[in-house]
Amino acid sequence: MKKIFFIFLIFICASSSAYSKEIKRIIVGNIDAKISIIAFESMTCSHCADFHKKVFPKLKEEYLDTGLAKIEFRHFPLDLAALNASKVSQCKNDGNSDILESLYANQQKWVKGSSIQEANKNLQKFLKSEGFSIDFESCINNQEIEDFVLNDRIDGAKNFKVNATPTIIINKEKFEETLNYKNLKKALEKLI
Image 1 (cartoon, rainbow, N blue to C red):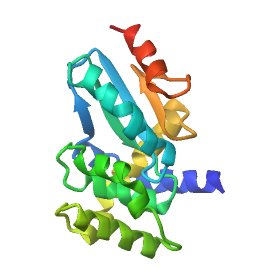
Image 2: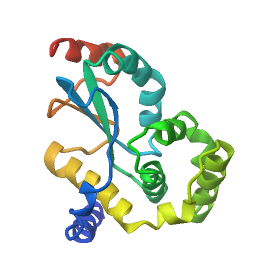
Image 3: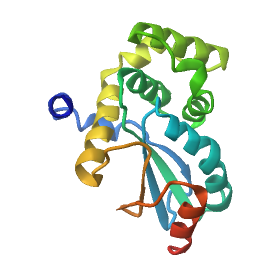
């Protein structure tokens, strides 16, 4: 089934790679930093939410805010709810991580429902309660953003052998250690 889904993604995205150049990536830190981190994540992944709660704040304080590194968030949706949340996080197309961070920080408030329709209602209700002003239906039905998100997933699987989330890439090398701040810091310190 996974192979069929992957082939389906390639078919959908093959003709739309030009669109992804128009959509801004969500990046935090110095764009020209010596250390470049890519985080492949699924919005419904509890381990990804843990990364944002426990590791990202320290990473931001010590490496991103100081200009030593940048992190680029890429999408690797594992289900339809994650796909829709990814589309919403990209919808303003401003490169800002506010929606993404809020979705991870409050994941249990919106990741629920026995159908995609119910999950979408919870997501929409959560965004409204947090004061995010977006046209929800327009966001989740935007084909360019969907192609952008799915192309991230294809790129992750094809070029970095991503098969779980979160997967961290540091200067184009897959981070293979247990993902905690201590291990991540040790890897980053070697690159400074």
